[in-house]
Image 1 (cartoon, rainbow, N blue to C red):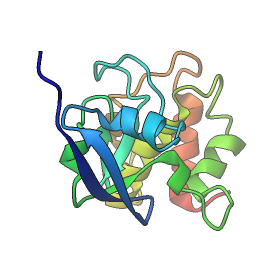
Image 2: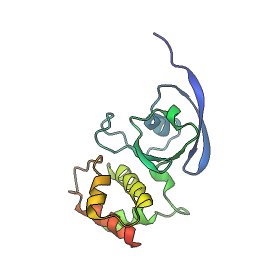
Image 3: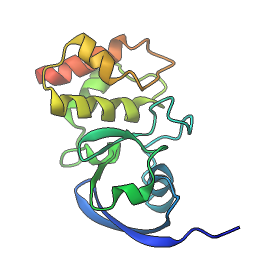
Image 4: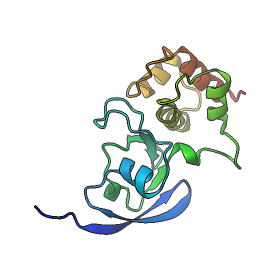
Length: 159
């Protein structure tokens, strides 16, 4: 059995330069949660099925459970912790809160990050475009109506 080589990985995490020593096969999800203490990114299915671990890499939603940390070298990684603006929830986070888009909250970070990626590409998405952007994210509580309403509110600039 061979031991994985550890190397320093350098990327921009939530707007700040970050270096971390990890083995080549370590998943971004494990690096974020265990090495860096950012537990907002949730471990769900560990197989790319639920979307709870969605983060943005260079502004594009990616599943942290399927992305090795080494793939992030030289890129920008954003987690739910990075969306706050001056210590306050972002417009999208506030919309999820105001519209009751979270029930148990487990899927919320992944939903918010997928929605944020969508709103960066398309600031005025249709319901069909919102549904398509969230297709890889599973919520077992809300039935998605409140989540879609929250994203629509954020797109309109409310609350």
